[in-house]
Length: 319
Image (cartoon, rainbow, N blue to C red; front, side, top):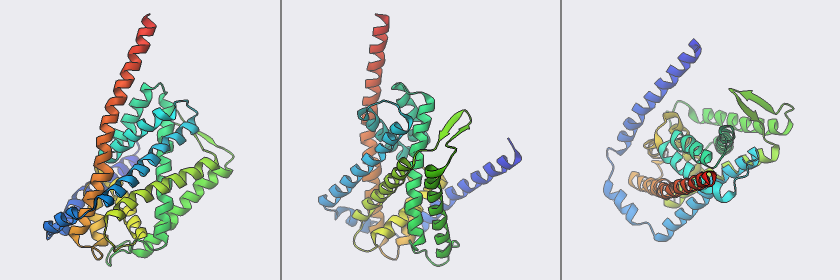
């Protein structure tokens, strides 16, 4: 391992540790004078129609999220039917959001796909394309919002609104570079650590960006539905973009505490703390915990079906 690599790893660990310390401190500072009665009243005031609408948008989001693996099926050329791919992908993404990528996005995906007969190299390519779809959509949405000056950062933040616009421009240029490479690159295949990396065609790449961007937009729509009138939808979406990348940097599962800190910091002038926290609690319950509950049941069913198939194949071999 090179000295440069060691220094980079130590710097990344130090940054992660700093966020682990900073997030609880910031969260405590914004919640220390919170009126919990206001939170309770805001939660109790939700209409069933509002909750049903948020749940419906969540369903659409996870259906789209799971369809990332259908892009992976097209990209790799494997022949598992959609009726097997979609439940598997749903389980993996629900666990991923709640328990980190290593549990849901990686470990579960390798286990479940391998039990359906896919090779490790194929699973790796499906996983890579799904990650690329998610972040290409993020770069497109966040880049566009940041360039437009959203969200408005409070005075005193070091990065400033100009810095945020520059970051947005960089994100958009990265997405454009990816699309141009997929459209015009002459060399389309590379090998890295015994893995083959192949650029998708421009149609698949464009579909990645659109699907990824739409999924992020649906996630923010759940929060927007649960909030009373105040901030515009683009503003809520932009705040979610910042909170999501902060959650990735800290490596905290489900961005617990990070999401709340960012929203309370950037939208405190528009909503009361109790009202805003109630919406975020509702968002976590509907978009994170409810899908996790369903995914846990689905996972047990998938494991049982896989065991039955394995037993049947074993019986046929013995016979």
